[in-house]
Length: 427
Image (cartoon, rainbow, N blue to C red; front, side, top):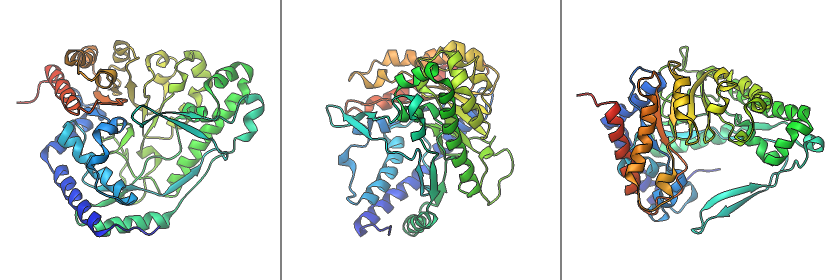
């Protein structure tokens, strides 16, 4: 597609780019980079960074009234610039404002070779809050053949066309950089839920275990083939800086790549990747280990570092499975996890205790219970105190601030106050 912007949008967006560049150059941004680096490098005594993921409450954080661009492409660029600026100006958390203008390769993927209709539901304010798949497999005993291996590709011409346009428009303000993840989808049971319902999945473990293993192997192979394809195509860019592997968990580290990387492309072993299995929270550790873990293990072995988990508790499957996951570097500790058990399990292992505080304390009630929030943060600091466990706080799944962004700012202030008690600021 030919890229263009109306002159008034171009001038306005260049102004936002200048503001982003100035924000990225602030001394506090280097301090924040160091926070994340120290944690991911497992530096002894590293102070926990604290970040709030905002896209889930964009009704408050990015309301329509703040946008000026009318063109689709202009609005997309505007959203990126404004989000970075508002994180710093309104929240003041440990997001690091990028000093580059990032874009991705134009990669496409037909994951299963079949159409899977998706239905979305909106809340009372018209915001999409839920979805439902019309899963094609109703019974795995006779539905496996409908699933095809994934196909994928990259449009280099259109990628470089967009990069050229961005460089012409913004390159004198912010360097334009193509970024990448690892490609392929390592969230295997999440992909499985597009093909079958949870009930069908659970029954398949008993009714047709061999076919379930075959389907899990196909999902693993899909992810593995695409990742290796991206590596062979030279699409991988080391993601050891201001990128996120899981939500808003930043990747800053000096431990990747493990070898010098010149001007050429990266390898999978240079990269962070993420995976989880929220869908198996109702599955016993033994069944998870039998039907899911072998396929995650094979994928994890490809990468430099792996971030495991999202909302599911890690402790039920730690001893049977997760402690054996290759290249594990960070574990999500959700509100349903046993914090003390996981702090003990991770002690001295150099694996990040990636704490997800209870989002309900911010998003459910209009009034902010500051003491309950402080106690939530303290619970993590208490559980990890005296242990060699690097800690980070990442707030996710807050769906409304009830129009009061000051509540989010106050949550940052309280969290920093509590962290100060355990990690007194230098000087």
